[in-house]
Length: 556
Image 1 (tube, rainbow, N blue to C red):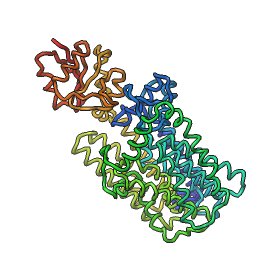
Image 2 (image 1 turned 90 degrees about the vertical axis):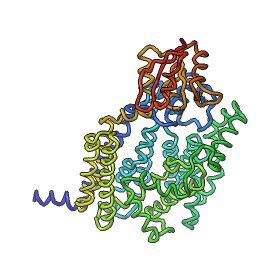
Image 3 (image 1 turned 45 degrees about the vertical axis):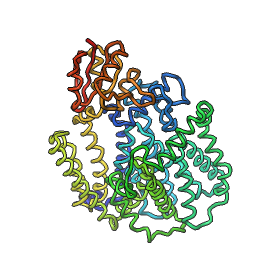
Image 4 (image 1 turned 135 degrees about the vertical axis):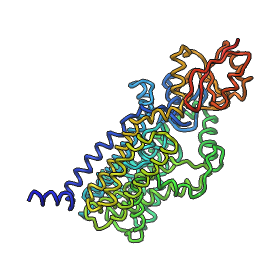
């Protein structure tokens, strides 16, 4: 009997065991979202800028006008800064504090997926959906795109969180029989639309488009009070957004409207002013890597769209239509944009998780469908691991030994998923666990040293330790945006919010004269000889990170 019981647990996969595994995985993955947030320096152009804007608002005690280097900075709304400022007050001005708000937003997004899926699960008579909520949340939590953006100082994850909760509230309201509760859900929907406007501007209206297109495509008369709610709900959403838009317009007037609305909305969408051109099909390509490792289950779900019952009031059928609209509307809308970045379609990932999660849940429950998708997940994992090892061997960063430690759990999970697919809970659970385990190993395997090559954090720290913490900082032949944060208060800016870039050693000497005869200069290694060959100045090269050097330049 004991042997038979073990066989039943491992092979037949009772739903109770699968649910316990899913909840355990969900807890572990959720905790992972807060692991090592401060281990890496701020990198790229956006992270250090947004972190610095929040710091300047904190220092100036101004929650209305964002500034960068003392210049008004109206590229994005204020929600991210409002989350970072209290984090700075509690934990200090650190990378961890800057990234904590986005990490919380990532977790809230996962909880919203769980909440929506749970409503489908408890109102459904379909026994195959037992465990739909935790498994969908696990899929969301271990999706590559959501993990990456939740660990960075970015507005995209905030928008994803607000859109997910708004859409979840709309789904609940549209099916809720009790008028009072339905009204509460609608209030939540419109409040979240307003917060979405604070998260990333006009794109925050996406939940209204998703809800409207969902109603149209279903070709069913929805509840009258849901339709009429626009009359009071839209003013409510605008009132929430007016908490910041009102004061910032009153204080900055046409400057704000020109920069925020005209330049960073319409010019960004209609022109290549910000240098992010991509082909029309760009997001179809991007969707594959950001939905890994669960891409095959998502594609498997979408492949069955012709069999869906679009007019049905069955909860899972309604969820499918809503999720499909949720994926397609941002994908199509942003495909027409002249400026394209991968983060623009991050808000589709919760919908992808719902569709993939349903397919995965049915596979775990019965094993009659989804075997091909699980084998594809396993093969993709093995291919990804092989590619990572090849890259490490060719580039030497990270070391092959380190890369091997990272990919081993991925290879093991991929093998289980591809070969032992009949162990359904083990296959799904190992894939989810391998994502977290691989990233934990990566964070403890020198990845911080690799990130230092893309940041001036260590260079500034070394210079400060040498006694140069009071010197101004300039740049020769480059603009490294990480200096916004790490050289805060000392970085030399031009006439706008960009650091001043010196085009030659003569301009560097002029800057040295303007700064009491001494200046720290950041310079790409290939141009370092332009500094060291100066005859009218003493140049002390302090350190380099493999791509950039920092030197102190003094007049003789």
